[in-house]
Amino acid sequence: MTPAVREFLERRLGAFSYLFFSFQPRDYGPLEAARYYAAYDDICGLLPADMPRVFHHTRLNIGNPEPFDKEETARFTNDLIARYGFSWVVEDLGIWSFRGKSLPYPLPPLLTPEGREMCVEHATQWRRLLDAPISIEFPGFTEGGTFCLGHENAFQYFSDVVETADVLATIDIGHIISYQWIRGVQGEAALRELELLPLDRCIEFHLSGCQIVGNKFRDLHHGILLDEQLELLEHLLPLCPNLIGVTYEDPVFDNRGDFAPKTVPNYLRLADITERWCEDAR
Image (cartoon, rainbow, N blue to C red):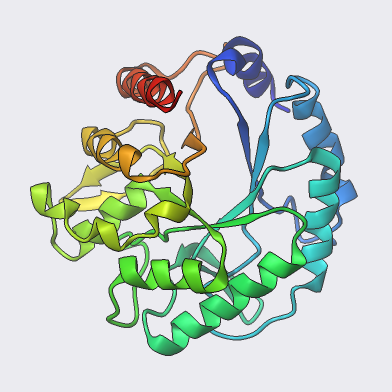
């Protein structure tokens, strides 16, 4: 754990209800859980024993248009689940690698009937292989960073995969906006068709720093939330009866554990919106 992360957790942990681990392979070595214990133990040593932990995977590759072997990744993941008690495992419904080659950024799945069937098959297999519930995240559609093949409505497609595979759903607010943006749907019109999403299966929202650059939507994970993200969150919160949490992805902070100044205003708005939702839920 870097000194900056330690400072941030020691100073800010009380503001959060759960901690979200985003897995990245450390190198090209073997996929063995024990190689990650030192880092994860270090972080977990700062957490209250009863603080829930969630694991964001990057190897489930649920959008892959071809079958692939899952046993090694399942063993690795279940070892981590056993040691850290992850409440659920989440991954974007995307193509993270293809025929053993990692992609620089996950692509959306093939928006075709055949692509949907393969996604259902992958998601169903992971549900059976993993020792924690799996939640599938709506994919990102970043113009200039990804491309999309197929013409099916991504909201309905996502819902069909989640419901047919009988898994949970995570909705990334920026990903929703990115999909609407790439097909030219903005403003009030961006609220249309959201009922096609599997809102009753949604247990978690993600919000990461986003920006509109040159009239293109960018999911930059730089900590600065857009007003549009917060407005969409407020619209969706009462529509998800089984929601558990709201994740602020990749906060940006300095070596003293202080939030980057530009991130503070809308982070505080996010905290206020979430607190009001918690009070209403009680």
